[in-house]
Amino acid sequence: MEFDIAVKRVDDAVILRPSGWFIYDVVPTFRAKVEDLLKDGARKMVVDLQGVSFMDSAGVGALVSALTSLRKRGGELALANLSPEVQRVLEITRLLKLFDVYEDVEKALTV
Image 1 (cartoon, rainbow, N blue to C red):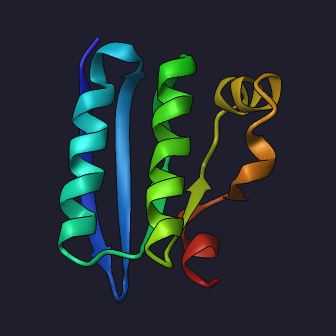
Image 2 (cartoon, one colour):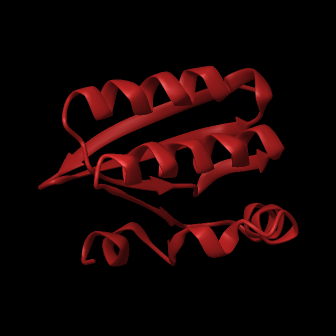
């Protein structure tokens, strides 16, 4: 399954739109993208998960790692457009409560 990450800047925020299977094999790609954005000064990120059709525990770990990295720098990470499957994975792992979750990107950007 293909994996891609589109990046869009909106004011002071960066929107990451991963698509495909967010699994172990693609975590290094996601982490590298987040690190590049942090080096460029990004402090507010929204991960739009609408295009993610499947996520395993490594994908969840990558999101937690990104959240931790941002918080260490005084930033924040929000999630938007969770599919029922992705939301269930986050609920099962009891990590959903770590994140600010929004039904769409627009709502996430207003915070």
